[in-house]
Image (cartoon, rainbow, N blue to C red; front, side, top):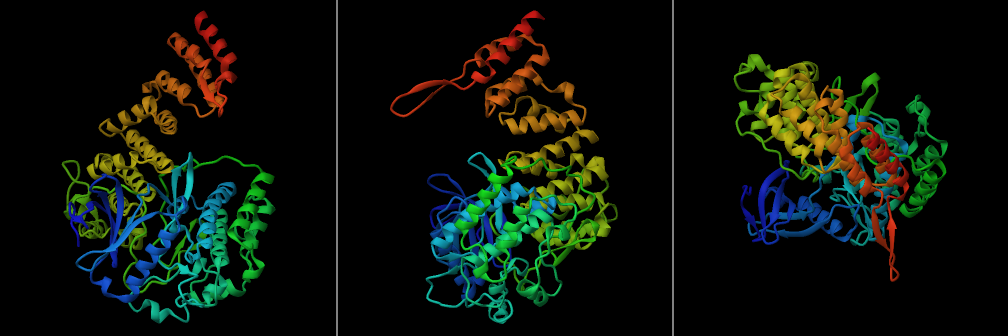
Length: 591
């Protein structure tokens, strides 16, 4: 297996590890010549000799290469090394997996769901037009990134089991988990997710793009209600429910839900049993989504503020089913035989972590070291982590949830494991739980390193959680570092969202008097995305009563931008706040 620093194919230098599995590894890398960061996906040489595995890998590269669309992960290169190892070069994505977001929030606002769904439909429309059916649309294969001023910009991942219309076959040769399971799983290859599978796909019938639309509808149903439409511990039973069971109404799945009838009708149309009765195409689905949003109002865009990251517990995402609060089950069923499929590319930053078992546990003079202090679960998981098996560590701890729920050291190890597996939201949740249970853990060095890396990301929802963790660390009395970071972000961060989030958290933890509100509000005045936001900044500066704001307010009354084509014109984009700024100046002059 390539090592850190090795150059592959004379072009790609490996700089870190993003994730690994039984079939391969995803590395953080850079192009030697242009220094562009990227992700390098490699098959292990031994599995590269398995014909079915290499065919799937080639299929994924070919499918992604044909779908050059902003809502799909981009692949820029594919090849085979001299030792027989296959590799694929993909774009680096900094965001949050939709499955992780649902794990945290359980339900999303229906307007937000439709906007995310619209992104996915746009990708599917392009893919279907290129003769490609994804066949595995599910939350684990969707990542939300910040792009085009949209923090909920969705991209589809993993075309490993995509169906190519022009691949020379008239019938799916590997669609059905029932009739083709032996053929596909003989070498340990993941073949599908029954929770989201279309009826015709479940039984190996011919499919077209409407199968993907069914899977998307299942996903949107789950995003809105908190549970998928069908739930059964038996895979065969679950598939039969897709084929014949009526879709439960929203009021049955979530009695407290308040969603317009037009939204439910739209999703139920996408869940029709017969493909011919469903919405006919992704383009038609987009039109229906736009129509509903127009009728019901656009609402607020972007990521909502995620609730407190100090959760009462955590749910198992790696077993066949998990129990929600209130006793409801959230199935996360997969047909898996043996080895893991190469991990889908998620976040871009490789997290630093130690190479020895004890480094994964709190260490130093504050706390005693040893299995008695940590507990056997923390010690065992730490050993797995030291062997480069973060997913195994997570799975082990989740399997002992009762023992580790209130165990601070185990929670800290869980945070380290989730961070190294790039599950940032869940890592932050575990860290917060650990520190709440044992305040001395606020000084854990590895947690602070991972937190710094997360704060350096661009994904706003993840950064919001990281800022909340800073607040937790500051509130339990760390060495002052977290408090200083929080105050600095609230006072002078160049990113308006981070600055405002940090100010809100600083207020909550009693650091309001340390924040430079004057400097922060001046930045709001300069960076406000629209005139209304800048008017709010004027009001805040007036409230502070500091005459030093007068020059900035004078400049703000006239913000000129040149517009037009051949005939240019100058436009004052701050005309709406001229009166407010003038009144604020008069008020400050009278003080």
